Amino acid sequence: MAIEPKKHQMPTQEPAVRARNFKEVALGYDEETAIAEAARCLNCKNRPCVSGCPVNIRIPEFIAKIKEGDFEGAYQTISITSSLPAVCGRVCPQETQCESKCTLGVRFEPVGIGRLERFVADWHNAHSGETPKAAKPNGHKVAVVGSGPSGLTCAGDLAKKGYKVTVYEALHTAGGVLVYGIPEFRLPKSIVAKEVDTLKALGVEIETNVVIGKTLTVDELFDMGYEAVFIGSGAGLPNFMNIPGEAYKGVYSANEFLTRSNLMKAYKDDPETPVLKGGKVAVVGGGNVAMDAARTALRLGAEKVYIVYRRSMEELPARKEEVEHAEEEGVEFIILANPVEIFAYNDAEDPRNPKNGFVSGIKCVKMELGEPDEKGRRRPVPVKDSEFTLDVDVVIMAIGTSPNPLIKNTTEGLDVNPRGGIIVNEGGLTSREGVYAGGDAVTGAATVISAMGAGKIAAKTIDEYLCTK
Image (cartoon, rainbow, N blue to C red):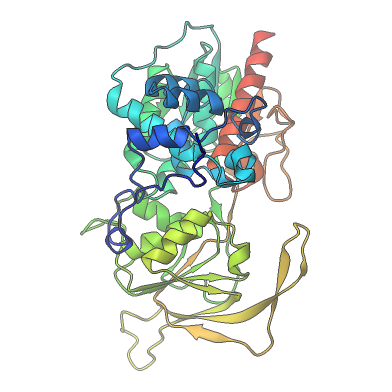
């Protein structure tokens, strides 16, 4: 039978409709489409796709189950190595990981591995009433700091081995960046809650509203009887450009903007923490977080949304799918441009004017690409006498984040690099015995799946460490 050269299309909401609601954009495969897409897999013996997955999902095996119509079997196969399949199927950059290694991709489009993973997880959640059972306790206790992808993965893997695991989360809802950072239209919060409930069924305990470094310290966790601590606290400290005007009202970090929308319900008619009402918005940056912020602003009622990015469209680090969705929804990309100043209203004749102190515009300079930098990307260089101004009411800085210094400042003997990332060895061990770390707390802002991979590695190392005690 001839191989279909292209992936089966993912059905989505119409752009004009979805740009004004928070419902999920992608609607998912049905059973017939999933089986047809699975049939494109060549079932390679050397399984190159698996080598591209940070958590080593058994990709040909679960796809083979789909071909047979055994969707629950496919889910169980994925679950052997992944604690968050419904999440990964939605937000992982498969195009640069597993799908980039797909043999079929040499001639045609690669198999839609991510779309199939999402289908399998959604099918299981819709049809299976069974919950996993907790493993027999092995007598060891481990504390996990942070309930993001690295923490949840580490906790899940350890719980399956019989460890008593407690996850400490600083916010009031478990999920970390999955709930405060990724919008509902890309990752419904009910999906994250379902994955968290699965971990709870395995015996994982989750304590919210606990800030490690303030409520409790790492040393106090050991005093409570924990034999190892995994730090997966993420990179929640936003970066700014340090340009004039960043302190004006209406300037947000993407972290604050998305947290208010995702976790604090700024999209409600009468929100307690509103972020914008109409107006024009400039989002500075070109990554997935910038796309999320821009598309969220549209859904919150912005009249116009700009993405301001200092390189060209070819260098945009965001996923191609997210960029395409943003363009379809009406986001305007202003490329080869960089902000240099933010303006605010200043009505000297009437100091009581409520607009005083609020953003009124942003000055940018045009850029051109020069010689490659240390990462191989051509360095943007300002063009002389090329300034221009955008009239906007809100500016959102989406130029990256760094690890919060709270834990390293309250934990003796914990080595960090110049950017604040915790230094670890290949197994995730830090400079402190019994303390492990992974995910964005180590690398700075990265992908969900890479954080999951780090959590999985650390869980294995912790298990080896405690088994020798």
